[in-house]
Length: 131
Image (cartoon, rainbow, N blue to C red):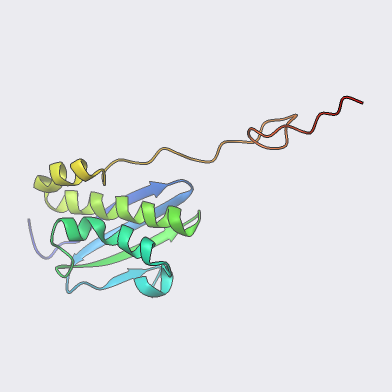
């Protein structure tokens, strides 16, 4: 583990894509060039993205810089968590078992189901009238 290089990773969730850079530092957290607290307004989203760092005791050892595109705020938080977990694993492969056990390295495959023709939505049908 070298202390001067940056580690990059990509995390995805629903339609969101997060590109993450982990750089040795003091714990700064920038998302799309904004502080984490200004970007993720809900406390639950902030908790989700800090989980991998808290699990590995790296909260104040690294600066996190992330660019996120697409999807909604919750999907972006999930994508960022996966990206941070992958970057931590790239930095120290010994963390893989710990992160895997908590489920932070599993890409959540759930996505929006497509609308079908002849229907109102993915599952909802048009109303049927007998007379």
